[in-house]
Image (tube, rainbow, N blue to C red):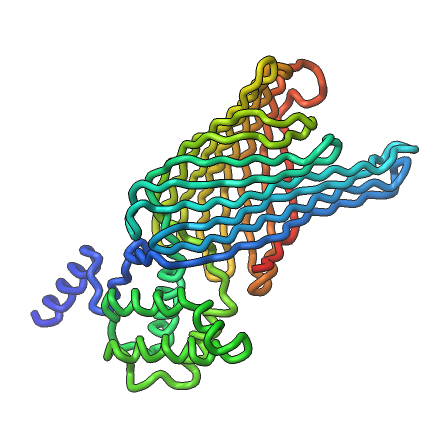
Length: 393
């Protein structure tokens, strides 16, 4: 009878999903620190070369650079953004010459909140500069306007959860720390630059990890004290495991400005801009983001309109594998050119070889609609690329 009662209790526990050893891990959105910063910088490349059974050797090289740095404080958010790409190729037909192209666009945006620390109204200023091969001059633009909302960097909380999870899996914790402990550890992680400035680049990690250790030990959930193995394990999580940037929140903005110089050499075009962002971690392993921006330039006989939408869903399959899915929509039209719409869908797996180097396998579909028939790009373009992505920051 006693055995039957124990068996019944075990079945009930399993059916209801209750475990005596379960840990209540907080959501990474529980972190709402207004002062934060992050920096992402990636170089990605794909290269293919062929020879034999063709008139001459051929190759295709594609490179791209993505950089984003954001510093947030209760008063303002400052964002530096840069995207550049280039390609070089040579066909297999005898006499075909090599060709190359490049383009780049950088911007700086400052959001100034009317009420510090709020997620409400702000005014912003933005400057942009771009270059493109074959164009007469650089593109420069200045915009100012109003906005509402705030996007918060919650990556420190994701790293805090990962450290405590690692300590738990290795038996250093006898229970789950409170949510306040997770947030305290996240706050220390977020202040990495402060530790670097105070203690120097060579030594700051000692003090940084020590304060994280002290915060966890203060929870009284540690089996004794964290020994050298536990400290080294936490250090490895902080420095050797890459966690993709996590953001939470939304904002909208609208502004007016001027295209100071255009690619075609013209200047003084009035401009309108409307944009929106939405970021949400669906779980502690999955991040959804969507950013959209529409711009219009106004000039008699040369009006133009551009719309870009970038949507992404990133899931951490494991500590070393990320699954990244993207949909990019770009639409442009002007008085002098036919409307052009490009849709790009991609799905990629990135395997972390080191903390900075990823091996990627990407499947991509591209649909280009230029309203011109039978010009060689009417069909859906399909590609499978294997390349590397190097993390600069």
